Image (cartoon, one colour):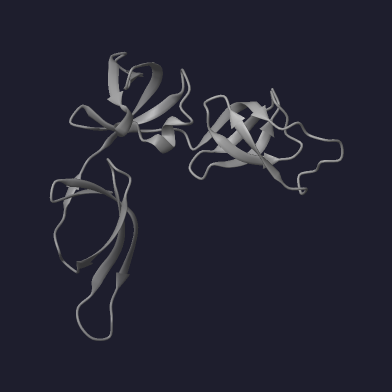
Length: 178
């Protein structure tokens, strides 16, 4: 659920209803700012009113970059949507690749922010060579991916391998066979 709090769009990430022995009940929440991604904790009294905001998720596809603008195509209307670097967020930009299908969070027809898929498959473009006998439990090394992101990978990963990565925590999951 997304709410409007003093003009700021906040998405409820976690909530807990608390009824102490003394006093009135309240709701403890963790709220994520839709635009900036910042997480704040806030407590609401029982019965306190909040304004619910309807955000619609629409499929969009990344097309190209022109300066500081990133152009996406709405998959339903085929119109071009220019978004700034700040709107997308630096943590997501390092995994953005051409023709990637994403979700656009829209309010009243305007795209507020973009959500990339949680898991992405990218090719390793630079890493130290693996040596014979290196195993999955033997340690890790940094690997630079096709989009410029750097993740820690097992020692047996080589340049040219395609990896499945959880972009939300910058973590290697597995090697993909193509």
